[in-house]
Image 1 (tube, rainbow, N blue to C red):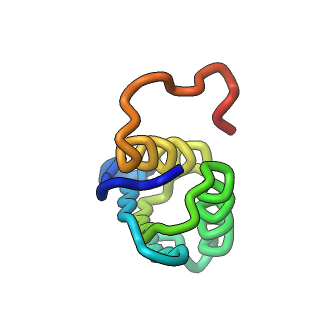
Image 2 (cartoon, rainbow, N blue to C red):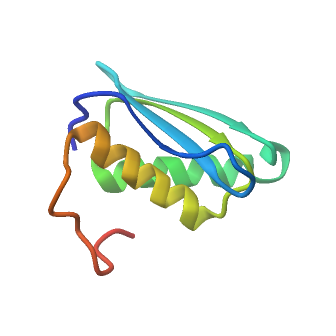
Length: 99
């Protein structure tokens, strides 16, 4: 997936995460700010990395501000931000196609 613009998904409410994706010329930069970084930082980074690989995003700056979101919530925010950043506003792969 090719990112065309910066996009944000999510909120800064408790048990949620705000994800910002920005196009980058080369590479993947991941920045994580989390209230539970000491306990779950590695899992959060692994979830972000896996989601970017699954979506085929190789060149992006990913900023996550996590407020204790579950992995499923984080994945949903990453997917939403990715589709927004790619300019895709229809034809979402529903029904289990997004993992």
